[in-house]
Length: 463
Ligand code: AMP
Ligand code: ZN
Image 1 (tube, rainbow, N blue to C red):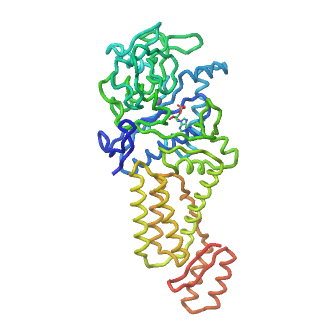
Image 2 (image 1 turned 60 degrees about the horizontal axis):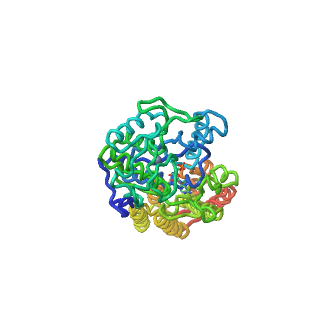
């Protein structure tokens, strides 16, 4: 049974979707005003792991990840460059898709762009005006936080005195600082705008996610995720304005991944302490190494990035790759091993047990490495039956559906010539022609293949 830590209740809860087996899942996507950094990727990898594990458990996932292609930051940067907003954001949207593909992140079902959902945002603001939750000031509309009693339930931040509360136009503002936030921003010089029923202007950032999530997933859906920095004010505001409009909870489970740090601070574009995937690749590392590193520690723990850790991730992947190679090149026997069958099943069930516990991936990977050690010992001592090998390969394929870091597709087949020599040697041995068998053994060595005759049969190894 899958249990997930729900930020809203601050507890691990059994995850059961509203309409099994369907799962509606909204993940806050990138603001496309520059290349994404590997801190963003940590959150996207966590969401990928969650998505893949839900699928492994048999759920049918509909994941929506928005593209924030209009907000304060995108407008400011495109103005600085002097190019139209759509041209500016298209550049970074393209880069985002390239990066997540390189990281083997499974595509979501929908990637809605904010600029293509203005009508939905306007009707949501209208609903809030009609319900008395929003008010107008100089052509902009603000959410009246004092009217929504549960405000603060998600982040635990108290709204405080309503008399002193002020309005805020910026999309992003100080942690702990509760304000009436902008739902709709009146037309301003040098800003794109839409002529709408509520006047000319453009949406605030928070209303974008409420409108897009509900239009794809309905008024209440199962999962809403993002990095911890999204919790306040973004998710708190999303929750407030959606629930105020519909009278229903927006999401049932809210999950937040912790920060990727660099030099003890949150990796953030505004701080300048970032690496992009492109930087990592330019240093000679592989995307797969970065994926393993970001994936392998628990999503609710902070992770301090370093190139050393990237090296270690590479070493772990090498151990797995060597194992796959050993497994494929080991000598085979007829008899299946009950111990190996048991170890394989144990690995599957323990891996799943760890993942069921709020996606405890570090524990799950520990289970996999213990299994690898057991099988490697066995491969060294003797060999493996074809059945056992197929069983283990099937398990690795299944687990890689969750972690997405193994390279199982590249089995290096024995050349036909080598296969023929092995068969010929076998025939020679059966007719007790030891001289010929030895000659063939030498020929095989030239092909980099060592054959050993053991009490259980012939064992074939690659040099
Ligand atoms: P943004 O494009 O800034 O809206 O961020 C996209 C996603 O990355 C959001 O879910 C953020 O919470 C997340 N994020 C941003 N910085 C970090 C970081 N240093 N570590 C982990 N997640 C982050
Ligand atoms: Zn969002």
